Length: 224
Image 1 (cartoon, rainbow, N blue to C red):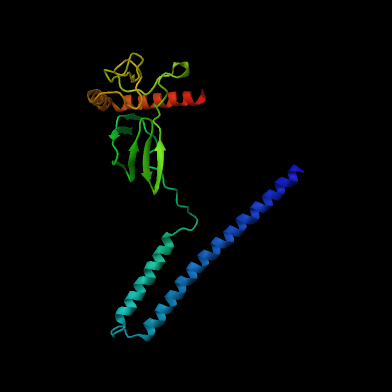
Image 2: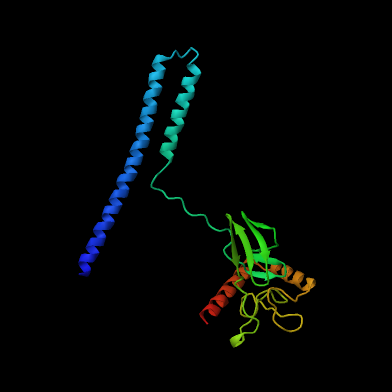
């Protein structure tokens, strides 16, 4: 019974693919036929029109249009699908007050990332408009501030902003009153500026290690 069902599905799929191939072949045939019809009309006009007369300019224009259509037909491939557009923002690394860390730069509301625009920055989410739609991003380091299991909150560069003893860029966030900070809330302007400077002073390898650590921690929270 299962084998018969598989055969039926295979036959149906074969018929569908055959129909699609026939349809595409018909479209190509129509394009080519249109090209030859245009070429024949151009030749007839060339015979009937004096090249040195008033119709010489129209003939040249028609021949140029025909040639352009033929070139477009050569370049266009009906079997190639246009890939979908990709959102210019794939992740938000962190939020610090009214700024969001995307890639290696800090952005504020109204700034643009490629052709996407940041419309709002909250304590835990960043809303970005792109291609007529708005999408919210949560920083990969945005966790609870002391939830079950003592999971840490968001993180920022340590005082040195350099790799710790283990060889990775250590990122620690503590509030000015000893508690964990969420989205940079509770930090003074001076503290936020220090964080930005520490991030800027980190090497590309240290930044990449930080991103990897944040992704691993975010994945661990999702599994818990």
